Length: 234
Ligand SMILES: C[S@@+](CC[C@H](N)C(=O)[O-])C[C@H]1O[C@@H](n2cnc3c(N)ncnc32)[C@H](O)[C@@H]1O
Image (cartoon, rainbow, N blue to C red; front, side, top):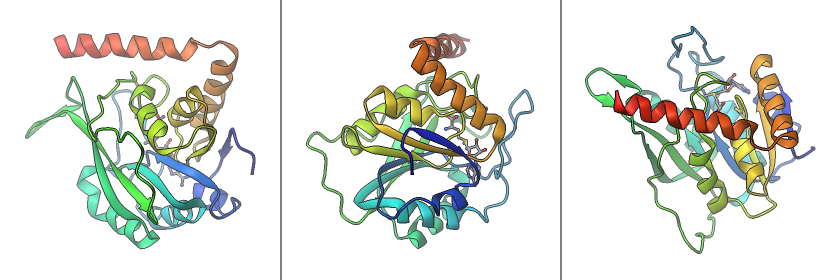
């Protein structure tokens, strides 16, 4: 299995071709099971049915090295389904990370202003020498490349803390490739899998652009940060 690649396909099938105990760290952002549609009508594959959830995390657990960690975002109103999938795969729930936003994604009964991810352990990982806080500032991406694009600045501290330098980071739900960009920017190898050909192409081009013209996607992040402060001020 080649490192530093983004594979097109269903991660359940693609991961079956990856050897067991192969990956140093998994950082992933699966569909939240909410049928999300953004203002432009963009949606996400597998965001309604949950039949893929258990088999996917079974494969994630298998390919992760012993005594290693996975960080997974999740849909907060579907926590029961995510817990069931993670635990039945063999993961232990060992932490929860909160990402406070400077703006609200939605306002209904409350102003919804944070994202969350769980820290999942296979076996008994060694604690880092300098553990990071479980609250990490949210970096707004602007969602230019994907309707639920994560800001790379929120991802790098997790990779730095939980993946050794030169280690292999897997994102089986890669979207526009934010995890992979973050991994590469701090000297980790990466393996991404994406089901939707459109986003697979975006992620592939993004990685190529990043290689050839360092800064291109940093501009996206900067624009996004400006948009975020304007939104916060409004
Ligand atoms: C929440 S998005 C990830 C967004 C990503 N974090 C980013 O910054 O662009 C989840 C992605 O998983 C993909 N996906 C859904 N089911 C999949 C599967 N079985 N295998 C691989 N990718 C899948 C969707 O097409 C979607 O792009």
